[in-house]
Length: 235
Image (cartoon, rainbow, N blue to C red; front, side):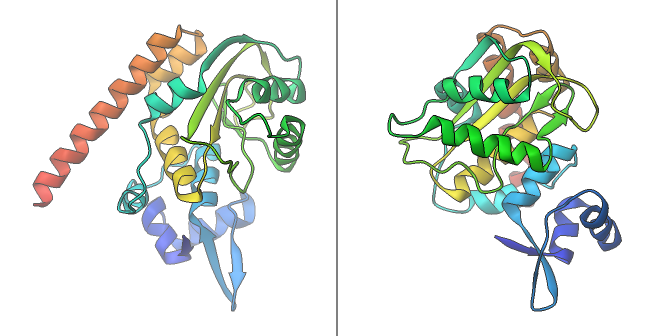
């Protein structure tokens, strides 16, 4: 989905001048076509997640109108796994350990996946602050998988990821999906959930998997109730 600058301002709740400043100074990806700037919806979500910028859920709601359904974040995280005490002395070695734990088809070249994640980090950190990173590539990791998944790796020792707040990273989320729309929606759900302070505290303390999954389920149930109430008010 391509967005014009005016469309982007509505989803970001800022004026056009701010969007242009973010493009110039903060690396918000934009593409020029026929003398006009456009933003890719996936890149917008990725950039906003990385930079701690809120994006209107209207963009996610538009994706929900598409026929493709995806599991809840809690279900995808259960499928991808929550891994504790993951080793890694630096960013590169931590990423290699993350890729080892991804539920990938046997034919996938894990060294290649590691290489593209490292190349993405060289372009700019995926550390979003508060010790959390979401390693990914600008084009999502699209694989022939039956269901999308989210893998959480809690590092044994925090690693410097050159995050926006300067804090070392202790929690890494990685998304594997089979289509671009599903990738966008998963990233949106993850970004929304990570604004929850209780969840961040559970990640900081390397809480047990049931506690992390339980909190994510609470966040999603609360969000579903709010969406339902909002729908009734509009009706």
